[in-house]
Image (cartoon, rainbow, N blue to C red; front, side):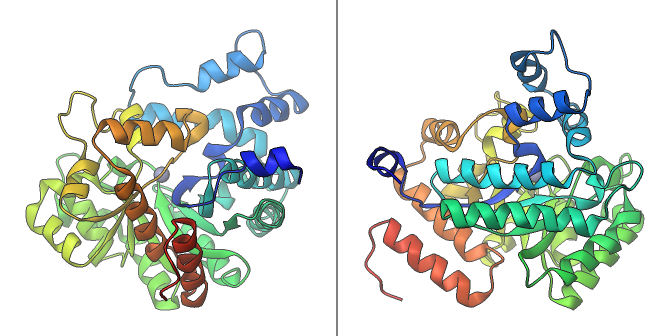
Amino acid sequence: MNITERVSTPVKCRVHLHVHLEGSMRSSTLWDLRRQKNLPLPGNGALKDLEETLKINSPGDLAFCLEKFQWLLPALEGDLAAIERVAFEFVEDEAGGAVLYTEPRFSPRLLVGAGGQVTARQVTEAALRGLARGQQQFGVTARLLLCCIRGMPENYMDTLDICTEYRDKGVVGMDIAGDEAMAVPKDGDAASCIQSSAAELAVFQEAARRGIHRTVHAGEMGPAFMVQIALDKMHAERIGHGYHVLEDEELYRRCIKERVHFECCPSSSYHAGLVPLTQTKHPIQRFCEDGANFSANLDDTIIFQYSFEDEHTLLRRMGFTEANFASMNFNAAKACFLPEDEKKELLKTLLKAHGVPDVM
Ligand SMILES: [Zn+2]
């Protein structure tokens, strides 16, 4: 490393818990892979045309954002070298964002390819290789979460089995993502949701039985009872987003008391139209005022096209201070899925990065 690089490398002080690996690939890499594979490109086929197509110019809805993944997945399907490359570049980008520890997530079963060219285990191993190489080269500790997708129950048990097989090889937990509307029948209540989500509940209960860590996308667009179901029926240790918990005061107070960690993604929630810009107060502001346990994360940077700096600018405009940012990082570190001894080391390093003497 030369002097210029050393000076420009930021002190690693961030903990990143909610970020989708496919959704965070570089647009230049996506462009490169689509060209290599003769996959269609928008406009004149230039990189900027692709970037323009992926970008959300005004807040849309979640389904509109999820559609954008159709551009991403074919570039990676069945291509282990591409998956490894994306994972490696992801860690390099995290280093540029001053990230000390990151827990990216993805769905290996979605990348096996239409003809099943490769297995979900090979896909997982390719991502782990990329993360490990990145960790070695850029000094960012990276662990993987495997994601189930709502509405694809045929993948649930296999995803859990892969989490179990690779638990000591870099996979630290399981998630479920996708459109929450799938879990909530029209005008449905908690009881009907529980009934229609039997497969989701079963796989998370089995994950708890096996000691696999669990986080659940809930209350992002769905009602507060989705958070309650995630906690009580799926044994979620963390909640992805969770903003609608505020609609149930009793549940919200319970989450504060039990220190439930909310993986907030304020920029993504604005751009996906889930928290309208007209809303006077973003839920993350309430969480901050009430001393809830939460962090700020990036979610899908290729779609929303912003960095930690952009996110912090947004949060500063909401009144967040440097002390709030530090507190979010410590909350995230305590809520991460590393084994306890490694978590302790992470907390020590984080204290050092924040200039606090070693008191542990
Ligand atoms: Zn997410």
